[in-house]
Length: 113
Length: 113
Image (cartoon, rainbow over all chains, first blue to last red; front, side):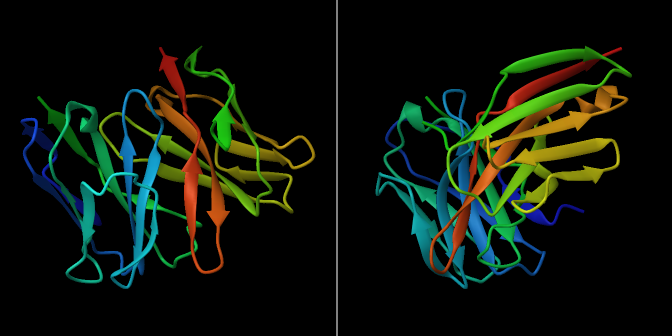
C-alpha cells in the first residue's frame, strides 16, 4: 500500500484556472515537502512544512500556496495557472525536519493548456 | 548552478555489466544521498553516506564519497533490467532548525538485455 497518497495522478487545466493537488502521508512523519520536476529542471524544492507550520519556501510566486489542515496533509493550491507550471509535482515526507531520508509519493502530473 | 550534479546525462549498459554514476557537489556536506527514480514513480533513497564515511554498500550498490574532491560515485554490479531508472545524488542543505534536500539533474541509466 502506498504510504504517501497523491491525488490526482494526472491533471489537465486551462491557463488562468486554479487547481489543488492533494497529499496525505501515513508514515507518521513530522515533516512534509513539495518538489517540482519538469523537463527543463531537476527535482526542485518548493516548500517544507512541519507540524503544519511553514519551514521553508523557495517558490518565487505567491500563486503557489501550500495548505495543511492536518499534520499528515499537505495540499498545494496553484492559482492563475500558466503553461510553464506544467510539471510533475511530488509530495514527500521525512521523520523529522532533518531531511535525512525523504519518502516520495508517485506525483501529480499537471499539464496546463 | 546546481549544488550537486551527476556527471553524465545518460548511460546504457547490458544486463550483467557493472556501471558507475558520478556526482560532484559544491558545498560542505554532512551527508550525500543517492536516489533512484523509476518511470512514473517518485524517487526512492538508495544509500545515505555521511561525510566521515568513505564507502557504503547496499546489496549490489556501492557508494563512495571523497570530501577532498567533493565527489561521490554510485556503482551497480550485475545490473538487471529493473535497474533502469534515473539516478540522482542529493545534498542536504541545513539551516538552524530544518533542512532540505537539493538534487542533481540525474543520470538516466538504461539496462538492456
